[in-house]
Amino acid sequence: MVLLAWALPMAVTAAPFAAYVMDARSGQEIYSQNADTPLHPASLTKMMTLYMAFTAIERGQVRLDSKFLVSQHAASQPPSRLGLRPGQRIELRYLIRAAAVKSANDAATTIGENLAGSEPKFAAQMTAMAKALGMRNSQFRNANGLTIDGHYSTARDLTILGRRLFYDFPQYYSIFSRRTADAGIATVSSTNKRFLDSYEGADGIKTGYTRAAGFNLTASAQRGPKRLIATVLGGNSTAHRNAVMAQLLDAGFGKAPSRVREVKPAPVLVATPREVRRTVQVARNEPVVQVAPAAPVAVAPSRTQPAAAASTASAQVRLSASDRPVARASNTAVVTPQAISAAVERAQLAAREKQPGDASRPQRKPGQPVARASTKGADEIAAARPAGRPEGDSPEADGLASSARPNRAPRSDESASLDRSGAASLFVLSPVAPASGMALAERAAPKAGAILLTAPGAEATDPAQPVEVVARGDNGSSYGVSLGLYRSQSEAEQLLLRTALQENSALGNAASRVLNTQRGYEANFFGMSQETAELACSRLAARQQACTILGP
Image 1: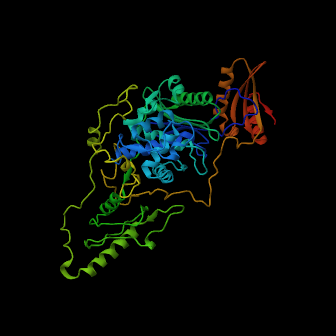
Image 2: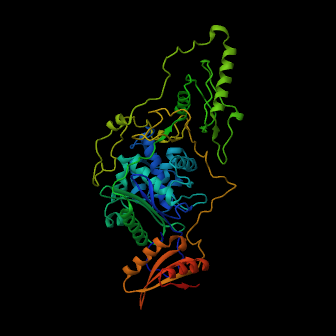
């Protein structure tokens, strides 16, 4: 759907446009246009930064009151900024509010650096998480969304991420509807206030803008039993972007069924390397053997799981280089279950040679339970959280007033970083069968045969096949079509909307514009090639719609 645009000078080149509308209840597509075209996401990137932060909090790796150190790099990020200073320490809760509400670049970068140790490492974890969430065409290079080579996403992927934030972290989701927020050193105002105030039922979530991206928005709204999530990329202005989003949601609410079976997204497991090693063994019904791989391990999918060796000798297992083929563009080892079995057998054999006869430890008795990860259910987890979701703009409304976990705060501010020696890094596991709540590796061991781990960078894009990211101004097409003059801007806009719905395939990537002339309001599509303009006019003429080709 190519939707409404306000009157702009003809010399302005349209940003690449993409749109996607989803029924949030079922995840079903309602409408898409260029939904899988890689584009610059701008500050919509911060949705993934916040998703990673929420995951770390729920994982117990950090707390909302953990103080993060501001680096020179983070403090030097261009606006929008919170105004952080190098060497400053600030609580995570304030960084989250600044990134979500004000879209502060320095706050987002500080979150990423402290969670992973550096922004490149955090970006790799973001990309790995995106793959696990089903975002097939996204790659991240920073935490804030400023334009950089190799940093891209799509309208479909960002809508999937918006839905994930709603379902996976309902206790924090209301932060995206805040008009203002206390960010510690300042009270910040929402970049999305105009749309939240103007569209009935809107309750989030994130805006974005760079020169290369245009004006972007992922939004969620509810009317009655219906909830939609939609993304617009490449708007010409804030007003244009908001008008397009309003039209998309209006059309979506009209099309979405009143009753639909709710299908919650499958939980994604998150674990530390130690837990991954344990769950690999538990999933394969092996005795727990202490495994100490030399690098983060990504367990690849396998249709069959080889039987475990019967020996129960206690041994340190290190995977050899032949067992650890390194993934492209990554230092992360990708290890198959067969490789793990081979390493385990070698270690057990070495242990038996060192301890012949009866010196080895006795085997586990039949029926003796294997040490398993905790299987605490979602109901128990939910019971530990405050009942209900607070409403309004009170400090408690966004779920950030206090940490939901009983973990002690770090003994020093420096320990808030997850990438320090001995600290636990985030490892992203693939989605498993749908279940209530956010399942973590510590709560339920995955079933045998499932993908147990997708390590950061393991699924990086092949550098031999670079992805072309379309930027604002890349479209050099200078043809367009005019649908005639109309008495009011509203009449012209409605015609453009109907035409976009009916002739989406013929119009391609064309953008729309209403020109206010002395003779009336002219409804135009522009940014087309000559061939596309001729095809569009021929299709419109067949429907008795006036159409004139506009040349360069």
